[in-house]
Figure 1 (cartoon, rainbow, N blue to C red):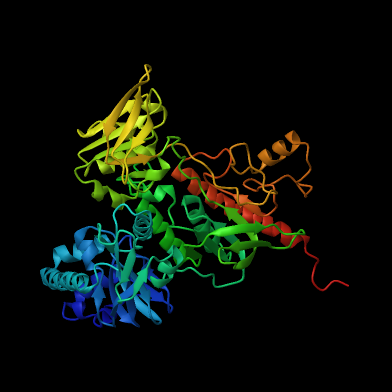
Figure 2: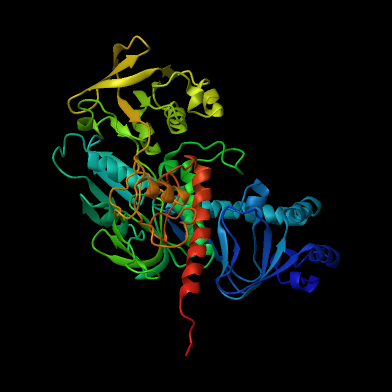
Length: 558
């Protein structure tokens, strides 16, 4: 327990009367930490601390790295800044050695500041000094980790910018215009290195993102870093499984580019898709999951015998073994079937939308195709930049495909127009999109509309053709799991399931290979549903691993 004498070792309390120290000690928690143990994580509820013994380091997530930015020694106090601002913790605190800390809860701290003017003045001065140091540190820190130079309408340049943005890497972009008409994009790093036309993996490695697996064998390999994959990584790592997640572009999936998710449980003010994916990424990494970026899976080779591991083949030929595999690859936006549109892909026509691209359309005319929440969220975001935003919806009633809260928000935007029973049937432009042809209403009249940007958010197509034939898919290429596997096998008059039991929930037609999220047949296409499926897939993984363990011969038998 904290005693009044303990408080004399903290500079703030050394000169106050003994009676006041007794009152503070009676309300203080005595926290003992082992080396590398976390006292507080960024984003958690704040508290007030005084360090009695040891050393506490301050960590802050910057881009994709958790960096140590300061440290506290015995006698120092901290935590007042977020408490006085009414904010959650702005950084994480970790014990660099065995430490002992006094902690006051927010209410006790605020009462202390209110009742004791001497302490209040001292704490306020400390807060001002720390805020000034943070400001100076921000000024001194490089504003960008990379500078991309290339043509605005170059597809490879757009891909690099999107990769950096979705991976939360601060960067600047220089439009080379006609100066480098035939040259590849160039990336200059903060340390002076220059990459000419880099692959995503080379760029990721140069930025010190994790791209290479640390081990040859895992308990579970998760393919895909959307909400389902990230949830599986969090639960798998937290429950002691040796967990690897492989993401070919950027963690977050389609949800990661959502400008606002208003109906996610526990976030009354809503949150962006980027915030959700960033928090999940940090959480999974802190719990011990390996998270690789810019790595694709080329093949899965199912185990040849019961109890043996599956083989996961990565791009570049790297081979990994894993006792279980969770397929959480999500879906891709369906392509518009319009003559000549693929020629303009990346040149004014885009599938999905990265938030960083909205600023490029400042004062321009934007058209979006689709009537789902993703299209609605994109329209809300573009409305803050574009001169006009037109949402083209094939159906007759928007409420059939979009949440009502989003419809209400769209109606408040004066520069947003919603057109029902409308579809794009033509595009115009030589080097870039110039106009679109829209078929409107039941009369199917056609109208030419000048357009600077066409963003497509229609349907969904799973990309599962790379999987082995043993993994059964439905007629739309979604992965079948559980009872659906047996139903399809009976329809096809085949006996491909090798075990006496039926497939577990989320288990595909290959024992130990599971599917979760949008790629799974019958899944509900919602972020929260994908998160739930990812966590449940780990529960099934434990069930499968327990089955394997039970089937192994007992050690020490005669």
